Amino acid sequence: MKIEPRTRGFICLTSHPTGCEQNVINQIEYIKSKGKIEGAKKVLVIGASTGFGLASRITSAFGSDAATIGVFFDKPASEGRPGSPGYYNTAAFEKHAHKAGLYAKSINGDAFSNEIKEQVVHLIKEDLGQIDLVIYSLASPVRKHPETGKRYKSVLKPIGEVFTNKTVDFHTGQVSEISIQPAEGDDIENTITVMGGEDWKMWIDALRAENLLSEGATTVAYSYIGPEVTKPVYRNGTIGAAKDDLEKTAFTISDDLKSINGNAYVSVNKALVTQASSAIPVIPLYISLLFKVMKEKGIHEGCIEQIQRLYSQRLFGGDLALDEKGRIRIDDWEMREDVQDEIAELWKTATSENLAEIGDLKGYSDEFFNLFGFKVDGVDYNADVNEIVKIPSEA
Image (cartoon, rainbow, N blue to C red):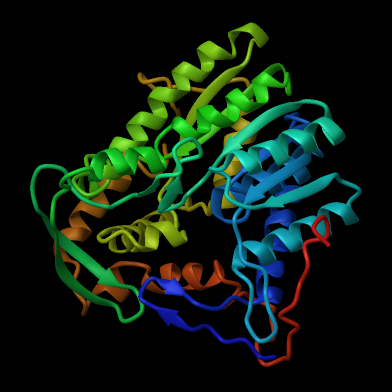
């Protein structure tokens, strides 16, 4: 079948298997071009199929020759209906990892559930013995609590007062003003339950209980802080409350890992185009300006560049360079004073008429479609493609 992008708001309803595979190949080639990283050899990535999680799995495998287990929740294709991009990404990753002689197996299911944790524990026992590095990169709007069965939904809201600012529809380039009502009722608590640190700790507890973490094992979860302009809706909002909880949990996990000389860290990463960030009002406008400024300064990074730098310079580079709250800051280039000052000035003048000139809306839009395997260089989108692709370790 021929597969074309079909969008609804910030969601793309289709994905292209060949484009997704080419995306994965491009990331693999980038990592190989940067040379070897003396990193972890047995790696578990929770949330492994897109974005920073996928980049972490690729960097571990092709940067450090690591055996990797990936956990994710993605939809396979059915006849006439493409699978989700994460499914195609994982199929491509495994295919190329196996071709390179690397161990790679994947488990597709709800990472919040006890059942999936048990499957992963069993697989590690059977195949790897112990894990050296656990990456926690889950991004889900909903969590069914494994103990109570209660379903929690996260919300993206400011806390305390209405937030009003500019945003952009990245499909049309239309800049408009948006107002978001503040959190109410259980909004904050529910968002913390979905996106905070509880599940991360449950994963580490499950691995510790079975002695599956090696001496000196490390675990890393990903977070974001961002600039002043997005603070009311992001860092000082409901999601920020969840990120605060995640960051606090790192210290609890580090205490738990003292007996094996292990550590837990939160890495604060750069703003990037992801399925999650596309849904956040204000963020697409900010990112389109950020891309323009960082590209002009020669310091622009995508997910794979960010994670390669995190691994090579921080995690395994001898200097974590932790901030005053004990976090790794790989958002350092984004938050540079000169970068943020320029964006603040551009923000004041941004309109529908001038955004194509002062921002990089095309770059934002292209990266959004790249997530789903579209607009990828070298792919013939007029060619028929087989939508049915299997993940080798699931076949």
